[in-house]
Image (tube, rainbow, N blue to C red; front, side, top):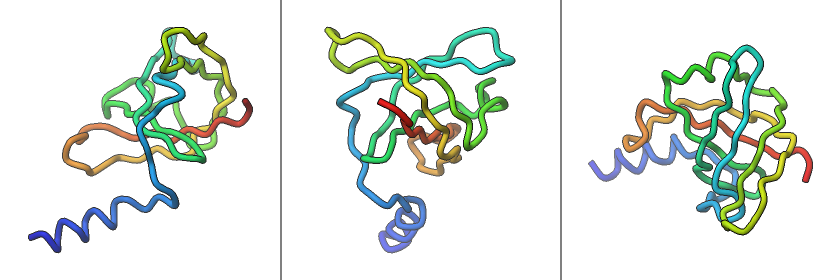
Length: 115
């Protein structure tokens, strides 16, 4: 059983670099055309090349997001004393995650294009 679990974990996690808990930003807020309100998501994980958010599979925003989309996103700092900042951000991937603890969600990969 342990060998099967290891094989599944290796096939799921194909990232080119390690991930870590967010320390610079805690959440991101954005809207897309066609939807009248703004969405805010907690940042799930980060790496040197980007970060990801977790979105429920029945969220209305999934119908309007595509890999390659570039959006102005408002990032909220992890430290309460900091101000939010708006950054151009590209959607890098939209992945249905099969990790048991987050079933029913998609991971949306984000890459900040300018700082």
